[in-house]
Length: 138
Length: 138
Image 1 (cartoon, rainbow over the protein chains, first blue to last red):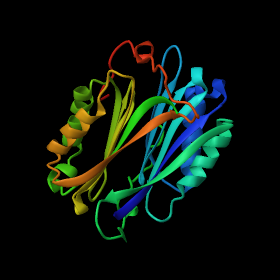
Image 2: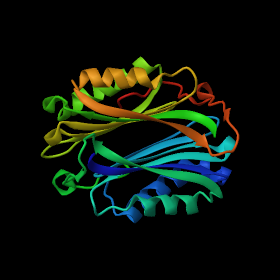
Image 3: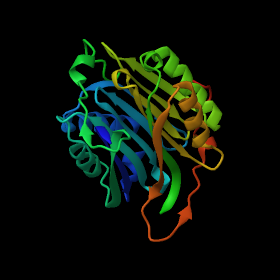
Image 4: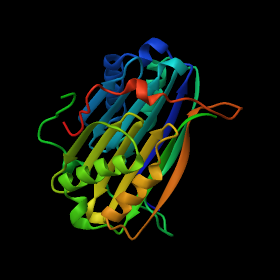
């Protein structure tokens, strides 16, 4: 593969049911997770469902991080997709695990990029694509 | 696993460079892909980078679909995360492949849900969480 990024697929189980139903808490948590990873926030969108559950996505200059919660199962499905060498999505994963008070779960890591018979790391060049002003949490 | 959803991880290579740098085209493409899959649009956010590249996410009642493009490599990283039995993310995958005029690539499918030693399919109950009005493409 001509690798451009890393995609962490996280299942957080046995979480705080209260936190999983609090869109404001989850947005603050995911934005801070982005910062912990060293990534750059572009936009975030969070949506509270009735009677329960939240979906949220933070678009970052290096791809995205997303969360979907099922408070009734004390479960959150989260992914951290980052490109470039300067970002560490595992720091975001660890921070979210702590914040959700998750006591079990799993994480898988996938390489993302162009399928190829040769191995290579491609340049992401994120700096060129940054917005002039940070439009986080608009 | 106590399964709640399916997550398709798609690498589209050899795409139309022009389409990969057109945020309006890509947003229309992803919204139509959501409809083809049978999912319900909640919100969409698309961002055009300078000098090139687009990131976009559609939050759906059944989770999300996202796209990140590198026109300089004719490559797009896309994921389709859907929950519930009534949605078929492969229809979205096929539609996007056609629209991007992708001539090569790959797709992986992951089960999403609560890690467990037993196999079970959990109810997603999307209907309970739908917004009163559709707020697509706000």
